[in-house]
Length: 361
Image (tube, rainbow, N blue to C red; front, side, top):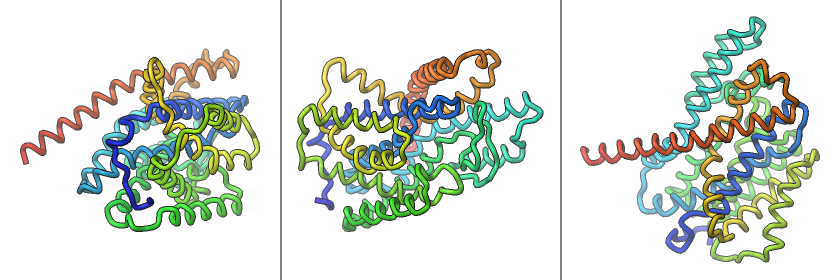
């Protein structure tokens, strides 16, 4: 079973329930970041949404590329496809982050951001490379220390996403005979052991825990691949279990206990993906799920610098933390909706350009 690629023709063209999960997870990350830095801390453990993203990515990429790679898709073609998917909105998020940093530098003589640090971070982060540092980077009334993608903090997960995408292609193209459960088990044990031994939850964003991001993403991504490969071997459970798992994952987002968050990431999140992959969606639910799926990535990759930009507006200081959170999140969602159309247009242009080059070669 682990060496089998399920035929996409036997599966749904799009997993709408997973689109909904992706969108809800992105919104949870927005609320997590916004309230984390204004004292409310509504969803203390919503960083587990990133683990959900990694598992989802493994499932979806296996569905989208498993057959293509088996049929001879080149690494260059695969990498081009992933860059055109992730790149445009990443650049938008980075540009917003640079703009927010420049605004802070020139509006506040006492800004802790030095131009040389901003320049270094900008160049490295543009190429999706981490900037290891021990500086304090302002975020609202707080500061974030030592983040490796200081201009757009969530981009750390995109670095690991691209890393594991490359490992995924190599696995499919060269090492598919490797026992997938063994790979998942080794990476999972390594991740849990290091997490417990070093007391580092949600690792990967800072230089101090950056290395732990590698076993984390390998374990979770390939767990998603394995769930995809098992898709034909299990059935959708009763509704009370299906929605019970969803609400249990959501409730765990509110917990401040690290053990609960870790159990959510390691046990409940994979169950959620496996179950909701089987959940049929029809009628008005299709449009709602598609909307959530479409806005998830632009929302995730731009919400951080949007907060920085909005928090620099003087009148925002007169709002309560709750009103700030609601207003900022609403603005971030509206911007994401606009960016969806821009992203689709840009990616369409890339595809047309690729077709023209292929025809002329």
